[in-house]
Image 1: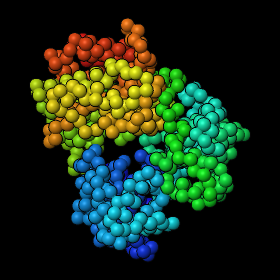
Image 2 (image 1 turned 180 degrees about the horizontal axis):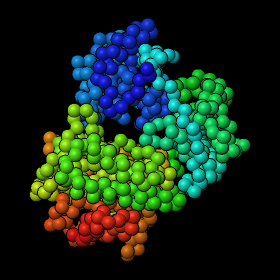
Image 3 (image 1 turned 180 degrees about the vertical axis):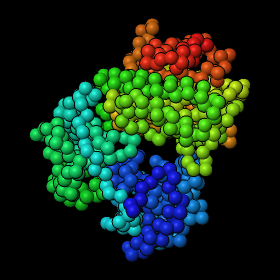
Image 4 (image 1 turned 90 degrees about the horizontal axis):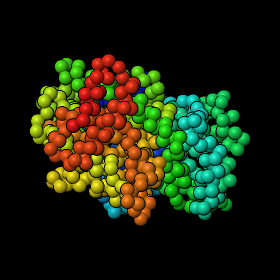
Length: 601
């Protein structure tokens, strides 16, 4: 029986699978092997066949890695998965280490160790950090032709996905793929290259206006492409995914080819200048191109910024998707405020109820990520996921944090609301209001053209800092248009990039507060960068944010006395707009509840 992986994956996987991997490592003369979460496409979410980290350890989170040595092993995750990694892995077999400490852990490997890696699974940028660590330990980082984990997995490994690839119509995309290819081709030439190698599925989906079903939670087709500077392209796509309508959709200037022909296609680029993004393409591609004598031009994926800066059609689609999603979320919040306050369901029922309301829109294609529902202490884990014995019931006197989103043909949503269970305490109201002040600060900020998210991050944190508080995650991430809920290169974070926030970029606004062992608070909406006029004219072009997400805040948790008049006015205006946009989609008790929930403070 082929193995599949979900949140209940067995911690005993390590006991069964580590010996199998170590036997294959020994056959290849390896003392260790790197197991990243990423696959050949550097995806965040993976098809079952590429869940290598889950197979070896049992851990199914979306970020992590493992290192397996001949006599010990370690699994590396970040703070989002503290509870989950303990529930899903065997602590006697795997040391549990923070993901940021992976290079330090490798520096402690025995001198002379030969540690293998699959060059198809690591970007050159990530690999360079790991190579330095292994060299510092006196070891060798060695590429392998045959992945020993894949060999150990054997016949139990699920088949690679073959979901049909469908056109994403121009009425959703807002620009034909022919025009996109022409535009990106010009960017390739401007970068000093003849062609670009595209390996990021999101870029391929965006460029060709296609969507697939190879990856859960994100409508991606797994493929690669070579785009010429004149806009002609070769799309390397599993023939099983090619529908009857696809060749006609792509036209004569795009050839659909079998992925088995990609190595020869790369070899044929031996005398050409090839643009490759080393942050998102695996090391195997660069090594192959360099081996045949191609001139590799290292640079950012030319689709990344145009994909992130949404056009008018995509923005309008996102508005529609958020109103539809906001109605579903409002129905859910009504359920939480009525039925759930009495029955005190567990987190799994909370998740299933929210998902049911989204499904009842009739437009949901998938969730945009696994829904987060943290009751009480579990809400203090920023990206907690209800797993096994960690699942809790709602408790009176505590808080419930729910973070979820949907994938719709016209947009991708992601929203977090924190609600009181029973009567909130003064302390809970104070902390919620401080988070709300941070959220409002980012919602109303104006900033000059060219400002990056890293420069803006402190604006949101200032109200928290003034109270001696902070949160350990970013303030905002980019979001795609019926694509990834986490999309670069834009983000708002202390450690963010220098990428300017451009008109049309969609980002989350999600400050939070987390009291370990008690409860957590996060308020998240999505917003789009827009030009902003300054009342007195100003001297420089300015940008601001338009709110896309509309769903009521829990008024019981707002300490009005802590809000300035401007902040109070913002909340009232936001609720009035929520009622105007969402109210017409609701009926009966839910409509009455929304009117009360959106009443002025």
